[in-house]
Image (cartoon, rainbow, N blue to C red; front, side, top):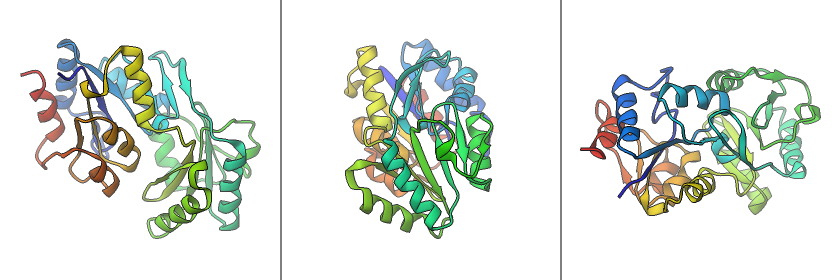
Length: 260
């Protein structure tokens, strides 16, 4: 029996380019809550952007933010936070500066970037936070939960391979299309989900997870009832147990099936 549904936001609950979930998807999620099935959002967004969708859906569950770097109560209080070792963060920064690439330095409440880019504009808007632009983000006084090297679709995969090879198990590298993000080895959606499940006395076999991207892969692999969205990247497809068929609203159809 499924007792907890865990959903990524962008590309999953919220269609790319839309501000909020569709009416049908929102109704399906609210019906799960009414039926006694918990719904947790697990997003790459920072807390304010995740909370916007959480509130829209009328949820009261914890929020998993920044790909598992933080777990928040609905009021924003920090339940669990995973910082990135400063030594490792500075090594990533050194690489970015050597390559003359902009970079981001962030924690649950601050997003500091070395120079403004299209990617930083998109992330700050999704996260509901004002980006701070300074030449040396590492001197901002912020203890980071992660750092990211901002590049392009043409360069990002090679940067990911280089940094993952150079730092090994000291860091968890995320291979996004235009940004290569480094977080603590224990900072991922699966670990965060495991913590939430323990607090709620729910076993992994009672969970269902849905996502579409590299940062969803750990939780898709962790839950035995996991689905990759249509158009998912290779990481999500490899990790998920099932793949949803393309259609008008495949996520809503899946969620509706749980309460029929």
